[in-house]
Length: 267
Image 1 (cartoon, one colour):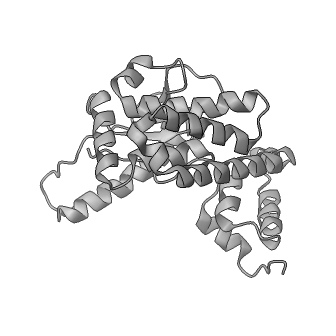
Image 2: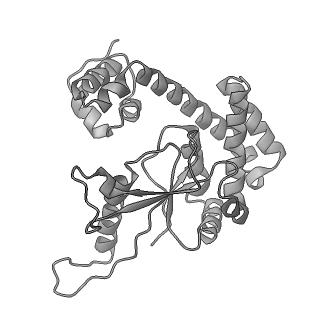
């Protein structure tokens, strides 16, 4: 199975930065990706910054798309009479959110079944690996790029705890990463991009938290879809981007487009 980086990121600077480091098509990123791959003993991993019990379902849908592309590229016909062999799937999620989690957590698709089913007849598992500071130290030790990444995001988190503003927390951590030559100069070379990336995601994180505190998350949990729909329309009217609305309500961009079709924005 090819090493992959999840194309459906969660809601903060840590995920976007992770993919900037490990998921690009540059020679440097490829080398770091290979180092991470080797440190993980040949498995295919993805990344998640916020705990999400829906990862098994997301993984199932994601790998279905990968298999579809694989079969097309290999010119395989599913209707042939012989069995088609496919790469073994392994779905593992990197977690570095704020909520305390164990080093390793197994998330199962069957947990989402409306009727409890322990038969194992149809299962898909996402293995969540905690890469926060003081978790899975051996893995971080075996992969310097991952360890440097964790150092940087941990520094930002520690700065926030001292009362620094978002800009102060990111700027201090970035200057420190440059002085320590983390990722062999990556932070110095990509300083403006990393700074902008981090601050943009901070703004989104704050906005999403505020909306949820206003009751959007509560309404969604209770199954009040009409409240989420109304919220999406109101945000869109006031100029909030479709992508940010989708993130805040945890729905797809296509769903938001359908909801706001015909809605005029405030000039």
